[in-house]
Image 1 (cartoon, rainbow, N blue to C red):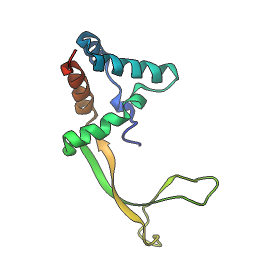
Image 2 (cartoon, rainbow, N blue to C red):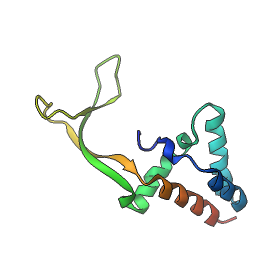
Image 3 (cartoon, one colour):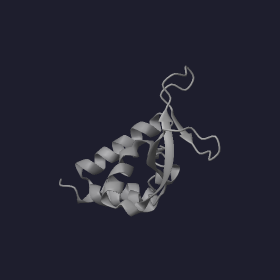
Image 4 (spheres, rainbow, N blue to C red):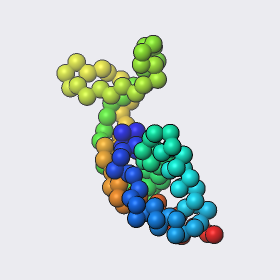
Length: 123
């Protein structure tokens, strides 16, 4: 989520203008989603989380991933449901799931592809 909700995914003024000019239903939906999250005090990137997953499916070289050992906390009242990452080499917990987690992304490419796809959408 740190990568999927990164401020570098905010759309630029130029990209927003391209969406307005596209006038497609998809472009309007994206602009409405951005307005919705921004009216609630969040950055526009908060409305574009799913774009990161689609971008990864389009071109998996656009996300940098790293292997992490993780577990979801199921007992603690304070951290119930949180994903705990084990980075220790010494005294590391055994038996944790190992996943490929995104650590960085080509945010400009992802935003450009989103805007281009919205402009190419049928009217």
